[in-house]
Image (cartoon, rainbow over all chains, first blue to last red; front, side):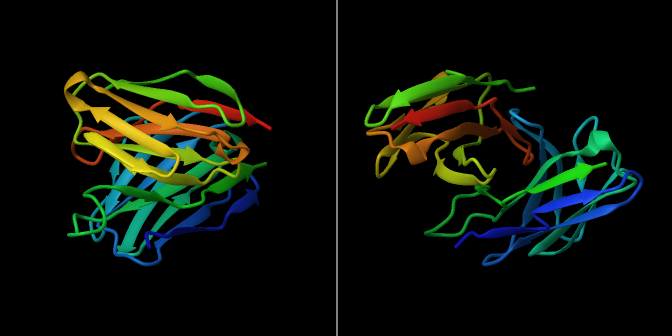
Length: 121
Length: 108
């Protein structure tokens, strides 16, 4: 249980194009999904938090018009990098959490997808 | 905001050795998790441990919430343990803060 997938795993695009990354919780319903960004040899930085059916909450310094997040259902969230530029090249990772359920997972425990490596030329 | 410090930043072990990784945090937290990021970037959940002690095979973790630290113990290390170990805390409102990580290399 607790499997999160991301698609695509790797994408190379030209500057100015938009890229959509999908994050799915495969075997549970995620009350909340998170998007992180990781530069080489650095830690993960939270970009935004999204709940199904409501607008995402962006961290300070993250442009919401640049990084569009849609949490369409309890198993799917998408991140669209609009008008991508070389400085947007990074490793993007999503995670999903589920509220407390008796017997198995702890409240707010996050499970991570495998990540998407974006390269903007 | 809350600060999360991990030590040591880098660690090289001979296969079979034991090690202790530390995570200090500057304020009270609701949740704390330990992750292992493998060379392909996947984060693997090790422990969800806002307080107390847990064990899973060769790994164990202890969080002393009142003193604001957590320890991850790796015993009888194997080459497959190599990677980066992250501590992540959540104070409230779903905002998760990651430490800088401990980069571990286990030599055969």
